[in-house]
Amino acid sequence: MKYLRLLTLLFASLYSHALLPGVADTKHNLSVSGPGSIKAISEQQICIFCHTPHNSAPMSPLWNRASSGSAYTPYSSSTVIASPGQPTGSSMLCLSCHDGTIALGNVLSKPTPIDLNGITTLPSGANLLDTDLSDDHPVSFDFTSGLASQRGELVNPSTLSGPVKLDNSGQMQCTSCHDPHDDSNGKFLVMQNSASALCQVCHIKNFWSQTEHSISASSWDGINPDPWPNSSEATVAGNACENCHTPHNAGSSERILNYQAEESNCLSCHNGHVADQDIETEFNKFARHPIFDTTGTHDPAEAAVVNSRHVECVDCHNPHAANGTDPLNGVRGINQQGSEISQVNNPHELCYRCHGDSLNKPSARTTRQIAQTNVRLEFDTANPSYHPVAGPGKNSNVPSLIAPLTTNSTISCLDCHNNDSGPGANGSGPNGPHGSTYEPILERQYLTQDPTTESAAAYALCYKCHDRNSILGNDSFSRHNFHITGAGARPFYGLRTPCNVCHDPHGISATQGNSTNNSKLINFDTSVVSPNSAGILRYESTGTFAGQCYLSCHGRNHNPATYPGGGGGHGGF
Figure 1 (spheres, rainbow, N blue to C red):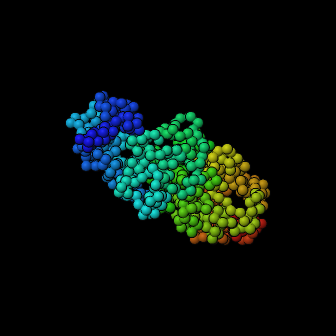
Figure 2: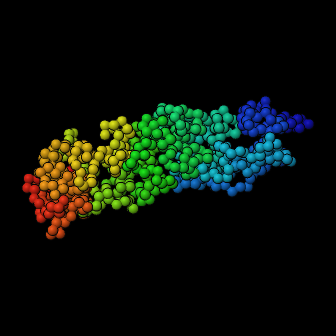
């Protein structure tokens, strides 16, 4: 008799609202006393919707629900190393409600389903996961120290001594992050997730502590769209991981991103309404990196040399590492030797991913005597001439350089390819080659159409580094002014030749050119320059500032035209 009374008290405690204030005050209380919108018409027992002391399912703890028997689509991606399979353990129990296949009131201990005021299965919304779990954080996989070591950026599970726990078989389950009996942290989380504290129990991303997404106090200015529609956090730092990721019903299955279109995960903040600069507007300019052209083509597991033509924000920026000092921190690239490197040291090593050895590149914008679209080869310091990106130039005598530039200086791709309204162009817009009004994403105007009337604006890009007065004053080439402005030329010559007609702005590969014919970046635009009457098309360097041309241009035959006091030397700019 005493044993029966003890069992009765135990059973009563299991179902007592008074003794279970935690779950009773949550949406998991589906009884008539529940605080949520889904609750029974008359059922007063609280725990019965999940548990029963007798005739339970053969699953702990005293489960009062049947398994749906559904086949689930587990999470999968090109970068996942774990092996999420069909749900097991507590995850399968949670899904008996949250997959929407079994009526909420259908419990094993009742001959008929509990009436929930006409509601059967979980309505559509954030809580309905359905049977497609590919857009949810993976569960029911073995979280081992071997996995952590192989995957990297994961904590060793042996150190999980706090509220985040694996199940008895060492698997990550829904209950690793959620406590179904306690909603004090919101969303039934086992701990507060402000600043993604819960995420960081397991995920230890390299560089994360100093990235802008971790420390920025920037907040939304209230102009729609809301960048954090499902969050109560007010700052970038507060949202942390959830600036881009969502653990359930993600917009993009792989890597559980908020949006399927990769760029949308960035532009939801980088549109001037959270981040200081409006990057989104830059991508609406005439010349831009075409981030909107592809969706789902980028893959973090792809080779560093991009052969499937695309560009996304994350091809150039690592959102787990970028910071205000170095927006390229943590980004891999290709070095001058053509080898993959895990961290770029200079912007051109990033540019080489797409503009170097990659296949299917578009044809050159200018039809040149020597065709080349591999900028890694064009900037090689073994070349006869090149702009000094990969190293200082060869020419020790360049009188047009504007201080502080010297012949020992190097420049960056970003000195030419950049925002036309950014700081390099004396504007207040964002820095970087996101977009420009000048093709191909040039910081300043550089007209290439022949003929062009010379002006400071027409060749503003060249005149950024090369003094206009020096160029027009013929300091390095006695006929610069004549060719560029047409001054002193007879009308039928049709001069006013753009810089681009003679000079190839990147460089000439050593495998294609030589220092006699291709110094000073000489590589003729063959839509303007053609062979002379003898069928010869070439430039010859004959000494410092001296040379001769064999060609036909603007109706004038050069066989050769000699420039004893001007014309290239033996080196690059």
